[in-house]
Image 1: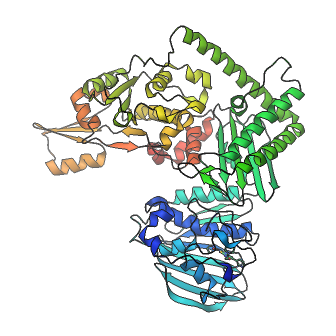
Image 2: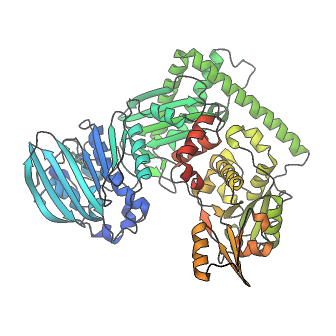
Image 3: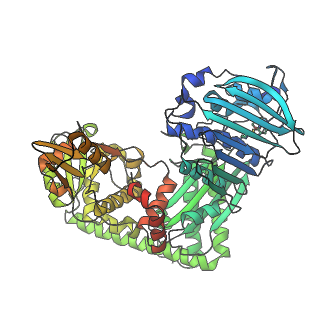
Length: 637
Ligand code: 28G
């Protein structure tokens, strides 16, 4: 059970007895979120969390995760070994109780606490319930013990099978095909989470081994989140050398921060509570932000870089180009928000604020060279923002940027209900023309974009805001941008990117996704962004016309209709080559079109990809493209 209070002085009798495992098999989604790939991977995190807890308690330093050939998983740690003593009420060994009772060791046990944990924090019993088999081996008391389960039921009682001169726990489980649709583990998914775990829990060594194809990785960071910031900035230009880092404890809550400025324009702050990525932010983020603004202003004034007449730097100025990790570990985290990833503990806000303020202040005092560069950067951001505001006011007075005026190029739809409306963002005027003619004008709006949109990784907010193409999107979508983004006023629930199926098209798509990711992220998080799939080939045989969306389909069609000289195969170079009717039939008609929903599972990976592909440094981009030649094709889908 993650995030729950448990006894530190272990005593088998203290385990809370709630219920058997039938409810888990009946409604697996309730316990692991889904029975799709996400849920499948979640099983591993639950088991690993238990090893991490043992490490955080100070009894273990190495965890090894093995993906076996048959997609079963082995997790091993060198902790104390799970307890094997008899639970007096249950008349079962503790390890059996841990694996066969839901909420065992749960909330009301008293004593110590558990820090690590997945969002759904469900523990070994849930993994056991959802596994075709699960085997536990324990090295403890000089002995080697073993117990076996199948679908949550004990199949071999705990027995001593040998001797051992070390301690530790090992669990092997095979997810149940009766529960999970897909049993194939994804190495990258596990690697990303385990790497993150290693960053967030400094000193713990996590080995990941894939026996399906002999891939191995070791994640071990003595520097913890300081190294996390270094990793996130590897494709950016740092503007000062030393990473601001510190850790402090108050009333049993620990706060750890690491930050560094780069020459980028966006801010990149990732927050965690008890090792869980708090995507929706919360009190720790708010506390950190106000500490940051205060510490930077105080230092700038004290050192006369801000004069008496100057007004204070605002939060935005102070966070431009900032990469930061905020990690808090608390006794009883309260998770709120739509996806339960917003930290709610109000008492923590002040704790994070005062600890952050102290740490940042101390760094600035002790590192005058870094400090000067940082303050100068913040003042530059402030000046640029002020200039942008003046420019905006000027244009507003000229009536160019009336919030209500929709862009001239937009062909709007007549439907007013956003839930029934969609907008196609189309590359180029000629394709835009075809789309306007071919569309269903009732609920499909068309916004043609001229040329490439601005690379938002290389421009500041005011420049971005002044781009015609970007302004057209802001007004058409109706929900603002950046900190003031408001999803509720979105005018179309589907925003569909329709670009040519060539290199330029894919570049424009990446530019658009980078913009949405940096400045309109809720659109991606809420699943409002889609990619249209225009066909690659048109095959004509007599009067019949077929469309193929990839080479495999082309071959299938040719097999079906028979290859021959009477086939006329056309490879589309761009959307412009299709007439309005063809565009409608192949790409826009909701009855038979294919749309790919853009979802960003992992904002940290996405950040790395976007900063590599769109950022200033050339070398990492070249390396990335060489290493991921295959992935780049689909990276943005
Ligand atoms: C191999 C797969 C994943 C684990 C331990 C060690 C203890 C333990 C685990 O206690 C009761 C107490 C603390 C959760 C504790 C051993 C005290 C004394 C332990 C693991 C519940 C269970 N001796 N190592 N559980 N508590 N490793 N690795 O699961 O909090 S689970």
